[in-house]
Amino acid sequence: MSPKYIAKSTAVAARRLGEEMIIMSASDSTLFSLNEVATAIWLAADGNTSLSQIVQDRICREFDVEPELAYLEAVEFVEQLARHGILVVCDQPIIPARVTGSTSS
Image (cartoon, rainbow, N blue to C red; front, top):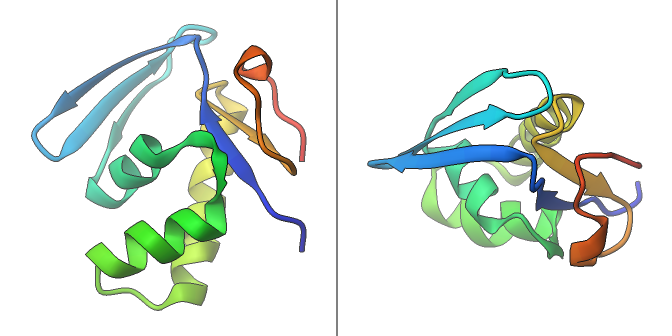
């Protein structure tokens, strides 16, 4: 399994409301309301930290969840947001110029 790196697309509007995020895709106007776990992933999506590291350092430490299950659910969540151009997913660290809404796995 190759590592996955994630970064926020620049083609979104996002607002934090308490412990949750509301995000809208500029490409298709899809609106997402992220729960606390999804918000933690979103906030950690810097393009340089692998998804497995985010799950290990943030999700498993902050929430009571098994690492394997947390990672599988994180991958599903990230892929859903990537399909809407909200997150960029790559198998190597993402440099800022590449954060345009496209994906490559």
